[in-house]
Length: 211
Image 1 (cartoon, rainbow, N blue to C red):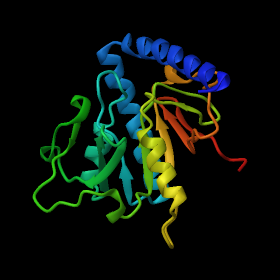
Image 2 (cartoon, rainbow, N blue to C red):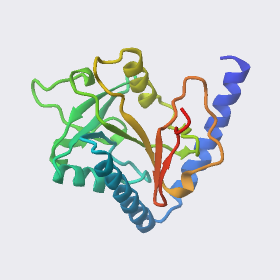
Image 3 (tube, one colour):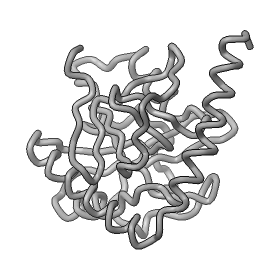
C-alpha cells in the first residue's frame, strides 16, 4: 500500500470510529422516528419516478431502519430484493423476498434471505433493480459515502458497470441516513462510487445534477 493510500485508509478508519460512535448515541426512539420520516420520503420519491423495484438492506444495530420502506413496497406490489453476503469471496448476491418470514440471521448476524432448494444463487439471474438504497456511516453533499470498509456494494456496482446488461437502465443509487450522518466531506479513493441521491429526515438531495 502506497503512502497516499495508507493515509487515506487511516483517515477513513478514524472517521468510521467517530461516526459509528455518534450514530450509536442516538436514542432508540429518535432513530425510529427519523427512520420513519426517511422511509416516507423514499417511498414518495419512488412513486413520483415510477420505480418498480428496489434493493434495500435490513438494518443492523443503529443503522437507519429501512423496514417501513420494505413493508410498504410489499404492500404496493413493488419488487423487493435483499442481499446475502459471502464473506469468503467478498461478493454479495441478490434475492427476491416477499415477506419477513423468508429471512434468517446470516453473515455478521444480519437478517438475510433464506435460500430454498433450487433457489438461484447469483444476482446476475435477476433484473437490475430500479433503485438501490445503501447504508453507510457518513455521507457528504456530493454523494460521497463512507461504508464499513468491506466493499460489498462497491464490488456489486463495479461488476454491473464492467459488464453492463443490454437494454438495462443503470439503477439509481441512494444513500439513506440520519441528518447527523451528513459530514462536510467524506474521503474518497478513485474507485469509490458516489451516490446519486441522499435521503434524510430533512428530505431528498440530488447529488449528481451536474453530470
